[in-house]
Amino acid sequence: MRDFAAKTLRVCQVVKEKSECVAESIFPQQLATTKHTPVLFGNRNMLAPVDVLAWGVSIDHLLECRCRLVFEDFLRTEYSEENLLFWLACEKYKKIASKTEMMGAAKQIYTEFVQVDAPRQINIDCVTREEITKNLSQPGPNCFDRAQRLIYGLMENDCYPRFLKSEIYQALLEQR
Image (spheres, rainbow, N blue to C red):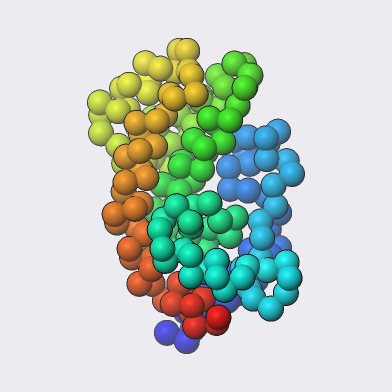
């Protein structure tokens, strides 16, 4: 347990060094100024202990926090980080105003997460996958809504409760 906690603290230090958002490869223009906030405590630029406590209140607090890289790291250990990455990509996608950019981003999300045998294929039903495939010819801001709701539900009911019980989250709670 101590080794995992030490690794967790190292992961938190790495968060401080990262300067690009997870979805930047999909939305470089929109995220060019996004920076991750460090997770370790004890500095005015770092995550406050109250933020870590808020993560335990709801998944929404965790997803809204810029330090959700801790959650991403946890998902990576469970081989399910594609869920968070897809959800984040959809959130950024909805903010795109240009039809041209939207078309390109929709194709990238589809290729990365939705199509069968995608590098980070998400677990959605075939009806939802087919709906997205049809919407791809003229994608709108709601093109991925159904799939995003399914993935959100999966994270909320499966991944998030395990995260709250995980050593990584418990170690952060103990640091407060």
